[in-house]
Length: 217
Ligand SMILES: *[C@@H]1O[C@H](CO)[C@@H](O)[C@H](O)[C@H]1NC(C)=O
Image (cartoon, rainbow, N blue to C red; front, side, top):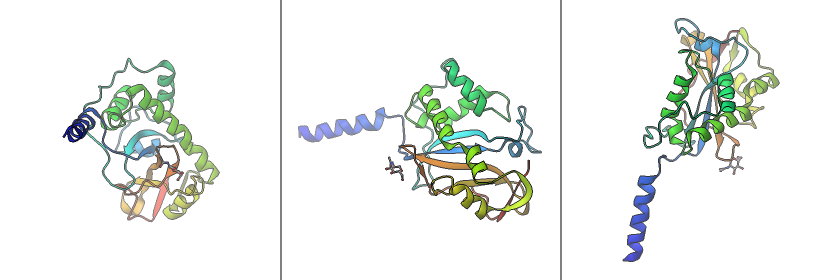
């Protein structure tokens, strides 16, 4: 009897004291600023077309399309709780292109994703910065010989060239624009809990059914 009671107590403890839903990886969503800001989408803070910037770093599941969400028990975003060195790094790699207010963008990302990480706000953003740095997307693209171009690029070629730079793991490309004139919008890739590249698994957004993408400068 006492044994079952213990289990029951433990069950309630685990169920109602954790802020997180299960996840087994982080998805890094890297956005291409010129595409994000292309008309008709105005940007208050457009950036030059030379490097990707962070859209988000999201707790995710590699075996399910369902990402943890609505993890409302975590504490609210506190803009005063950003160490100066962290803020400098975030300002550099995670600008709010559309709204031009970085803190608002980070708050949304904390609310929608960070709260599900089980980490404190400060630790979560350090984790994001760490994974962004490990991703080294601009360098990997350069190593893959992928450069901006107005020539339509075969998606499968793009993917396999970049995968060679990502320990064989194929990244996820998302696009915007008409089907016959798709433009690269984001490159997404996943790290498991020990910071190794892993396939993201089931995903909701890709460039299909397009076979080619345009990547303007
Ligand atoms: C992460 O992936 C690497 C490489 O596939 C693997 O060796 C490692 O065990 C994985 N870590 C976890 C926590 O699954």
